Image 1 (cartoon, rainbow, N blue to C red):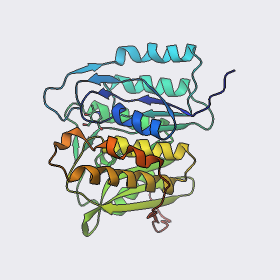
Image 2: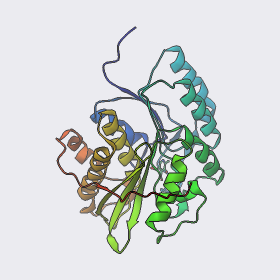
Image 3: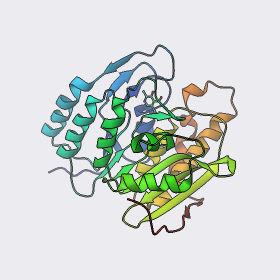
Length: 298
Ligand code: PXL
């Protein structure tokens, strides 16, 4: 048997030609962090779906033959990481793939890409919510943004949602399987200039919080970059709070590197300018542990 000198990640996301989302973010980040990425594109798009008139080829009919070929090659993965799905039918195929490639000590990450700012992405049907609610149960870690957390929990989104409601939704999702539930874009009460990431670690029954400055710009793909750095840091052996710190810090660097330009935000953050920082020694640390909550409703 040949050895595998670097850890390997199966990346199940779309390939969008323009806009620095999904595979065009996942591959450079995880490669820069020292991992081999094996992409299985769920769809190929001319650009991401926030540009008008994009063209999309859904690869659902090919997913199974692709992963069966991987099986015949004897491929093994230290991590299986899924994101944007090309069709609701793909969720079942990805569940099959996850079962078929499961092995001990494997990190399964599902980024349930569904929407942002309170809305489902225009290209997705509401059927996608139901299939994503199932797919996340296979994951070790899920990384919804606050909109996606509400969609997955069948709760109406509101910008004034309270922290204890968020914690309850996270706890309820963790009861279904995921050990790490990481929620991004969480507003900070009474601090509109801030945004935060809240994470629940089921085994330890602990909630972590990372807050950082909110920049008044929205770049597609930051969720993909965030989850990729988080995944890479965990694969490198970091603890959850340190991995969260690194991922949040990297997004901030990327947004700051981009924000000063008069620039079409739909092109995403200037990832190429900041990728090298993924190799830099880790310095800052700002995570907090939230007060222990005895009585969370299940
Ligand atoms: O990063 C989210 C994302 C991924 N893939 C496609 C998208 C988007 C967000 O707009 O359109 C195709």
